[in-house]
Image (cartoon, rainbow, N blue to C red; front, side, top):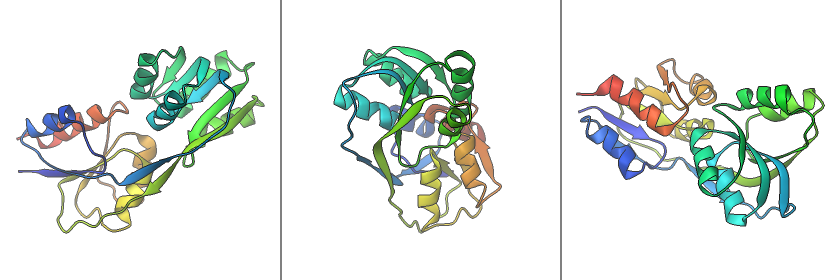
Length: 215
């Protein structure tokens, strides 16, 4: 049986995608999220939200937002379920930045983010003189763990997860399954044996694993 390591704990439904295909699974959380006590107005006009962790922080604080510009299918779904008005969504920050420049450049934005956020959106906004501010709502901490076995594949869902895993392990001959191009770029520093999800979602990463290893 092929065995893979997930650097994120999976839901029962996600695990079943692998187990039903005859693929063994070891899982752990390679990173920890620290929620921050942040300040902002009760009502935000235009917010940029690029991760589920950010969305959870916004929902937990019950912050009202008129218009949300969002990255990620799961992030968008979570916000939509909680009654937020999604004006634009994109799979990647670069794609959302293009939409902001083409259609909404006159607006003023609040960019809610974590401490390890990608530079694509803020650099694009600064370069094009679009008014925005950043509010940090969480921090990412690496939580490395050493493994004494080799895995046929390793699932990475963020650059931070790659960094955490590499602190105490090597990729050796394992296939690195990455949720997106940014995560793959980090994995590329340590291996060329990389498969990238065709859509940036956990489920699509698992689809790639099943395609590769199904018994």
